[in-house]
Length: 222
Image (cartoon, rainbow, N blue to C red; front, side, top):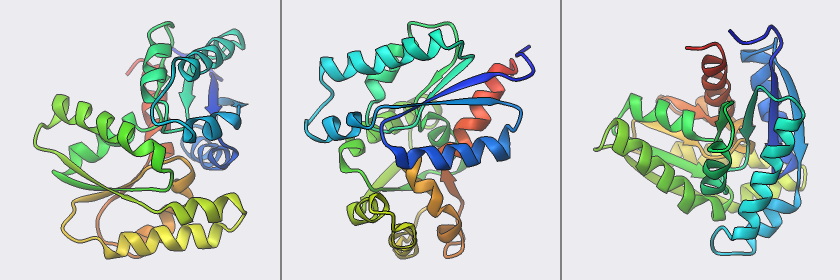
């Protein structure tokens, strides 16, 4: 069994991911001990290249090693643009190391065949679609994901305008037709979940909520 107060290392590539996962842990796992590790140059450097470079992968692995040295019982990355690098890091440790969206994709694939994904950071799109396809191949081969990228929402959020961020995402969600579920692509977009749920009548999945539930289950031995 996991110890009474497990230490969870949260590795961030942008400050805007910190608040949503803090809220999800407080609601879903209040007895955990979160530790925030932030390198906000990662998102800048990732946006500057078409694909993950060996140097970026090495940096992700180094951050996971640092988290393990801190005594982490589990590691959760909160940026969606580093999937393959996180997989490499996960193979190095005996503790759970989660990509941001794997739990969310499992949940939405289990719910229905057609899912819509609302993203705000374009460099993360291709990697996330590939991750979804991998999960679909394992869980439900006929599952499909359609992506919508709303970059002005991220611009608004980075300037501190949360209201505009949430409104733009909610407006996009309201315009969607024919989907079984909506996934909010990034940890940062989870703050728009309430606004989206107020406008749509299909399930809305966010990565922080799903990731906390999966990580807790893994550490509890379930």
